Image (cartoon, rainbow, N blue to C red; front, top):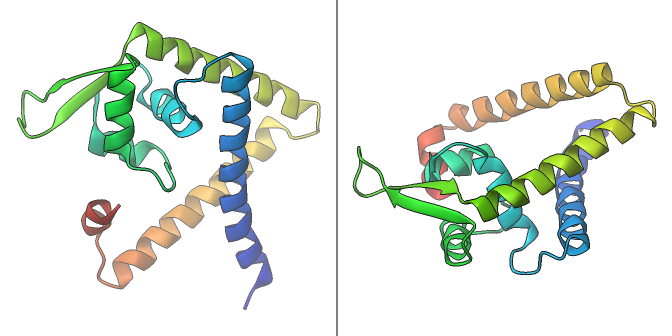
Length: 160
């Protein structure tokens, strides 16, 4: 068994948890106490678009969380507005309110600061691009492996 492969899997998981910790710290520093790091990441991933819950779920990793529940809370707290889809009355489309946009900008500014700070650590734009390329290829490989066992992406999205 290739230990580097196993180390990569562990690093991906660890990096996501660390990213969530950093987001929580940024929320705390900014005095945001009514939403959590997962909910703020959902706001970030909505961006300036109007999305269905399914589209939003495909945009991010909300590990151990129920996206519909979190969206309900974000609507209750005034960060997100929602309306029934004109094309499918069973689904809702969500978009950020002004309050939600402020949180998105907070995270956008934080990520921009981090990207700038990485250059000081000798992590270049090119090396980040190479890392992204490898991770995207790994993503495609894992997607093909789930298909190889008769599990379609559609079936996986119903389970998630």
